[in-house]
Length: 318
Image (cartoon, rainbow, N blue to C red):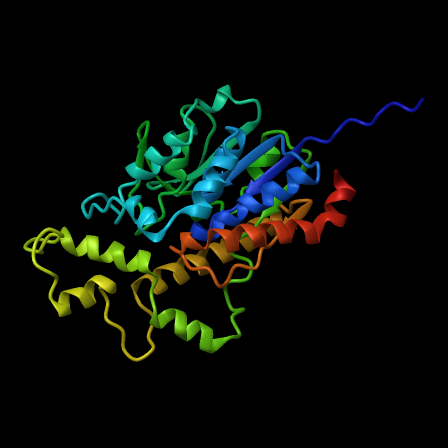
């Protein structure tokens, strides 16, 4: 009898992309159903969060929360604090991870895992491979301008998307022989042909982002609290978007989100050109905005579709 060939060590690099990263759940679901279970999982930003749920055996719990979360539940995760280097402190996100059971030391899990963050002082990428997994995720999701940096040891860390948006190199360093990468930003920059849809999206910010700014306004000196009288019309307009628009000009979150998209797109192209994965998955997610976490079902479905479309190529390697 011919000896059975050893199964290649599969690595999964989950990229950054904020709310679009919920598609990683669908990617993992479809891979597992196809009999392709990663041995090494490395994630950046939202990729670190979904990857942590997978290695902790809590992917189903995260999926259930994501698919049923209302915009009010999402807003509860946004503990606004203007003095912390970002609009959101991040403690409520950590609390959610702990409620879902994603909180053991990384080294205690059977699968190799690393979360990628960026050293705010040096700009170098940092691979978090030990310690409580929820703390590694917290460092990796510190999106500049949105989530405040976090102190790990003697380093202030921010989002890993600034240095390594799709961590193929980390998977390879951790021993992966076949690497599947998921790029969430591949269809965002310079590919939007539906101008009417884009203009409509700019003109109508999500309820989540509007509530975020309302809370931010409530922390300003002299601002009225939720328990006080209703916010005056002018203040309410600022709460919806602190930078008033001229005609169809983009708002604050649009500028921030698209700037990050452009930056990460360029970094991703450069990194993937020098460190190509065996299979690159690019879900079509241009219709999901930075903070649109309530579009989880749509994102997850696209993640599944992306894997199903790539199955013939995936089967060649695994």
